Length: 160
Image 1 (cartoon, rainbow, N blue to C red):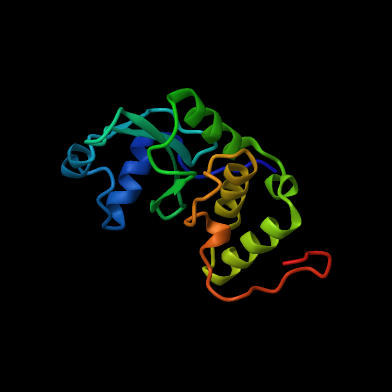
Image 2 (tube, rainbow, N blue to C red):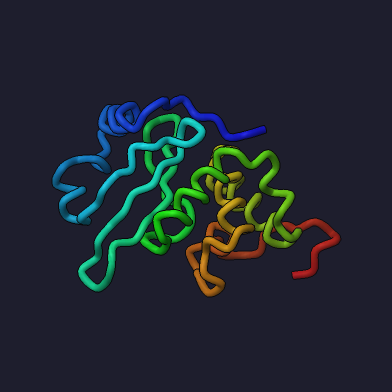
């Protein structure tokens, strides 16, 4: 089952974000990060932004709008070329069973993260796509399946 969200346009995402009191799309926020927002929305929730940091070239980030309008980052921030970011956004929207691509240990850790932080299934699926397709650096400690302290419960077939 593909990820399908409630948004038909980037304008709807902007309105929903503002309605919950967030400032992701405010002119001052966009100016501060030198951000541009791509008009394409994939699967009713995924879109791409680009940022121009002071230390390098413009780079692209995949974003996900929760049903509430909250915006989350999928994959690493400001780390992709334009085409790669759009491919990831499209894959997050279209992948039928993203958890199936993950090794059991990663899948178990990611499911534990989702349960601990009450992450919606569509967000878990997007993280799974990003991890499975290598959109996080191997040493990235902010990867969702690596964020938790303590030892989660794993399936018996998984050795930690």
